[in-house]
Length: 154
Image (tube, one colour):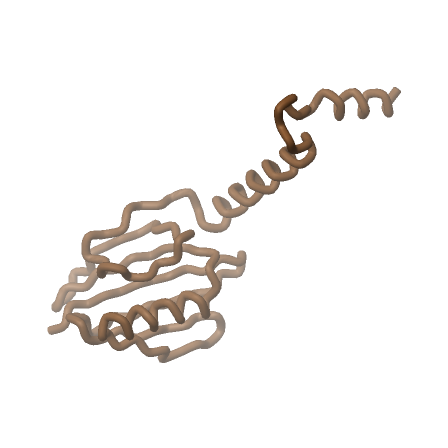
C-alpha cells in the first residue's frame, strides 16, 4: 500500500507536457536547484537590496550578485560616503576587479592588510583621499561583506 502511494504520487507530480522535449524529472531537478539556490542566496545575502548611491564612482566594480543593504553619508570633514553590501563573490576576485578599476581610472588601489578574513584596500587619487578604503570581510556563513568608504580629497 505504501509503495502504491509513492508510485501514484510520483506519477502525478510534474509530468512533462506533450510538446516538451525534457522529462518531468529534468524540469523538476532544475527548478529545485534554482529555488534552493535562490533561497540559499537570500539567506546568506539578505533580501534587502537598495539602489546604488549617486556618489558611487562610475563603473565601480561591485560584484553582479551584490546586495547593497546600507548607504550613508558620513558627517566628516572632508565629506565621506559609505556603502555596505554582501556578495558570494570570492574575496580575491573582488580585490582583483577593484585593483583593475583603479588602474583603468588612474586611482591608486593598494592592498594594505589581509588578516583573519578581513582584506583592506586603500583608495587614493581621482578626488579621493583620507579614509577612503574597501574592506572585504569573510563572513562565517560563507558570504562576503563589502564596506566601501570614499572620502573626498581635502
